[in-house]
Image (cartoon, rainbow, N blue to C red; front, side):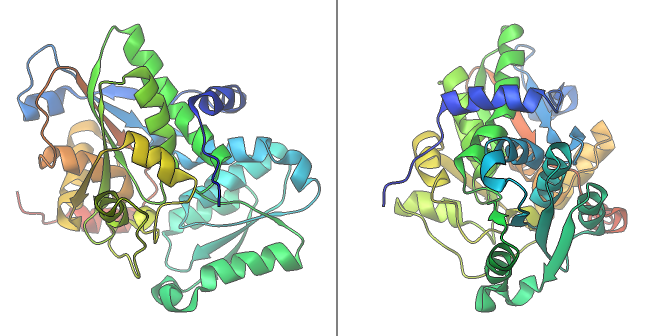
Length: 337
């Protein structure tokens, strides 16, 4: 089966869509992290904070671009999608902006903040038990049933070229800002799960800074991409686990894999404890409350999962902030130094 893939031109085309709805998210220089890493004055570290979006994560970019490019197909039908929570609020926001009904399938154990955000934009939610999904496949079954019985149009949270291109607009923001300042990039760290964020970001970063090493970061108990890189083909996990609820896809998408294989040559894995430590680090030093999936790339840098030697700046993606406060406080409490 021939798979079409998103291109840098698709990302550029998506930018005009995104700008109708969203301002660029902040690119924050981390003086604290430069000092922590012992960098010389001419090397900077940047944090791209997608948590400042109206839905608290990057997912809204891909969702808006998907919606804009499927309006004729949707017509007066509902949109059906499954999501661990962030695409749920993203596609719900897009549905609100374009006046479309959205029905979301979410794990019943998703953070309350993700339920609240999704409902705040007008979506309907159906839930499933994620603990047994690897055996029952109920998530996909329920989503397909909604699409069939309610004559809906199904949206993928990551395995779709419009989603990839929309997510890549954030990468264009990074490239444009750093080029404006006359900077170069040696390393780019980004979380990877289904691959919708990393595929889009890597298209933009590879085009703007072809010398940059693009590094995918995963939980060590959900490392399908690392295994796929090693095998040279997509590997699926039976039951990915861990606190990074946004990074527990079974495998990377069909449309994502060719882009990832071309542009992302390195994958590193991080245990949950180090992710929790990174959550505390960025909260204490930058005042940013992040969800685990959002902090995992920072954890990879703090724990030196990759060799940072070279010339040029480091860019670290924080993909989202949507975590319940009581759970956040529990995760960052009583951590070993």
